Length: 392
Ligand SMILES: Cc1cc2nc3c(=O)[nH]c(=O)nc-3n(C[C@H](O)[C@H](O)[C@H](O)COP(=O)(O)OP(=O)(O)OC[C@H]3O[C@@H](n4cnc5c(N)ncnc54)[C@H](O)[C@@H]3O)c2cc1C
Image 1 (cartoon, helix red, strand yellow):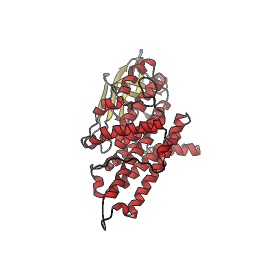
Image 2 (tube, protein in one colour):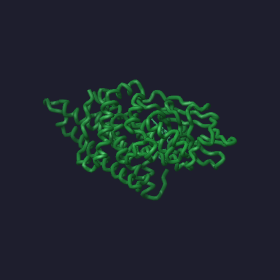
Image 3 (tube, protein in one colour):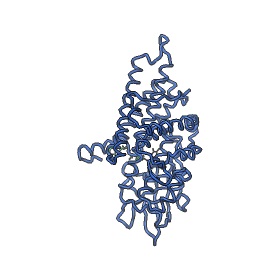
Image 4 (cartoon, helix red, strand yellow):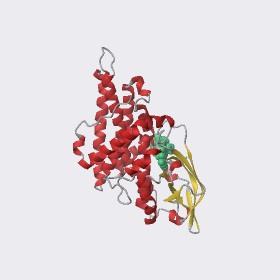
C-alpha cells in the first residue's frame, strides 16, 4: 500500500524557487504520479521498461529540456533539475532513460554535431520518436575510459569502427548510438560517432539478471567492421574532454534526481511511522530512535536541495565547474542511499516488499552510486580540486 506523496520542504525551500520553477516541478510531479507510479512496481517486477511513456514524456518536453531550439523546451538548468528530481522520485530507471536521451545523446549532437546531424536527430529525439544511447564504458574500462580499445580507422572517405561497449543504458532500444572511439589516424584522439543502430556490424544485447534499475534497459554493444560515412563523425568532438562534458550534464541531473528518490523514501517512512503502531498502541513515530532516523533524512535532503539549487544557479549563470557538479552527485546519491536504507528499516518487514517503493529505490541507487563516475571517483575529483593533486 504505497502512500500518496506529500511535498518535502522543511525550510521553505519552495519559496526560493521562482514561480516558473515550481510550475515545471509540479507539472512533472503530476505526470509521474498519474502515469509512472501506478505501473512502476509491475515494471520493476517484470524487468520491463515502460516504453508507452516515451511519447507522452516527449509531449511534456522532458527530453533535451534545457536545450534551445529544435523543438526542445528551453528550460533553465534549475527547472531541468527539478524535472529529473520528479522522474527519479518515480524511479531511477526512468530518470536514467531521460538523462541518457537528453544529456548523453541530444547534448553531444547539440554541442559537437553538424547542422545536418542536429536537424536529422534533435527534433525527432525531443518528441521521443527516436531514441539514443551513449557508448563510452567498455568491459575492461569503466572509471578509466581513456583506456578504451574501440578504434575508428579511415577507409577512403568512410570510417570503420571496431570495439565492445558494456553497461549501456537503452542500448537495444536505441535508434542511434553515440560511440566514443580512438582515431587510428589521429594519434588515438577520442572522438564521437553517431552510429544508426541498423548499420551492419552493430549489435546490441541486453544484460539480464539485474537487481537494480530493472525498469531500464541495459545492454552490451558490439561493433564489428561497422562502416560509416564521414558525416557520422561528430565534427566538434575531440579528446576525452568531449564525453566528459556530456557526463557532466548527466551528473548534474543525477544530483537532483537522487534527491527525488530520497524524498520518496523519507515520505514513505514518515507516513508509515505515523500509521504503524507498536507498544502501548503508540505510532512508531513516537519512539525517539525512529524520530532520529526521520530527522537525519529530512536534514540531509534539505542540505542536498540547497546544494543542488546553488549548483543549478551557477550552471544557469555559466559559472559552474565540474567539481561543483561532482559534489552534488556524490553527496546526494550517498545520502539518498542512506535514506533508502533507513526508510527500509523504519518499515520493518514491509520495507522489503514492493507494496512500498523503498527497496526498489535502494537497489536502484546502488547503480546510481556506480555510474556516471563512482562515489570514489567523485571523491578524487573534489580532492584534486582542493589540493591540486590528482590521486586517481
Ligand atoms: C545500470 C548501469 C547503467 C550504465 N549506463 C551506462 C551508459 O549508458 N553508458 C556508459 O558508457 N556507461 C554506462 N554505465 C557504466 C558506468 O559508467 C561504469 O560502471 C562506471 O563508470 C564504473 O566503471 P566499472 O563498473 O568498470 O567499475 P571500475 O572502474 O572497475 O571500478 C570498480 C571499483 O574500483 C574503484 N576505483 C576505480 N579506480 C579507482 C581509483 N583510481 N581510485 C580509487 N578507487 C577506484 C571504483 O570507485 C569502484 O568502487 C552504466 C552502469 C550501470 C551499472
